[in-house]
Amino acid sequence: MKKAIRNIWIWLVLAFLYAPILILAFYSFTSATMIGTVREFSLENYKTLFTTPELTGMIIGTLILAVGVALLSTLLGTVGAIGSFYSHKRVRKAIELSNQVPVVNADVVTGFSVCILMIVIFHVRKDTFLPLVIGQTALCVPFVYLSVIPRLKKMDHNLYEAAMDLGCTQAQALWKVTIPQIVPGITSGFMTAITLSLDDYFIATYTKPATFDTISTYVVNATKGSQTSIKTALWALSTIIFVVVVLIVVLANRVGNKEESR
Image 1 (cartoon, rainbow, N blue to C red):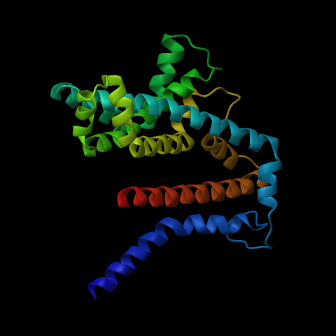
Image 2 (cartoon, rainbow, N blue to C red):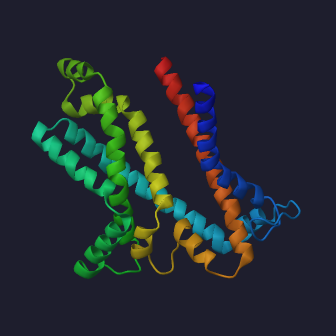
Image 3 (tube, helix red, strand yellow):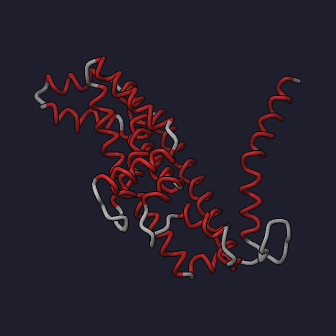
């Protein structure tokens, strides 16, 4: 009886999480203009998504921004994690504490802070991408740090010392021993940074150039407009993003299982 109740509870939670997404995906393949009215099945939403210059430009720009921010965040977060891990205990505790603040801090505070810092204090022009990149990097770096640190704690530290004993310099031991062992954590941090950049709304709203839109800011603005075809095309975009995320998660789990088996 307990097992049955547990299984029912799990399925209810899964339904609560995924049913809205699956409903949205279903309507993306119809000609309906609003949720609740089922018409004929159609691929018009996907055609609109990939043939409208405004939409394709917004998607490409968002992806370029996300990859750039993820690369910069992964570099800074990984270097910070390695430096913190090999630091003195008090220094490591201070770094860990300072890293936790941006994680729990509200995005709107980060957005306001970066906007004031870059535009008001340093007089950076609002039509540049520098405030946006810095703001999203500040958002993503702590999560990369949190992805890399567990891998550092889990690795065999005797290998690093053995490499030093065999003639490697500290830099060589780092690249040949430490980095290969924490690659899964670095990869996880990189993917997390891409997700955070794609999902960010508040920081992008306060720091982006006026002529540029990310997926998040565009979706919010589109829901206030009157172009029905654009709104329904965003259903197709949401479905594609969900499918890509599912494929990445499945692939990452399979790779992780193979590594653990080895």
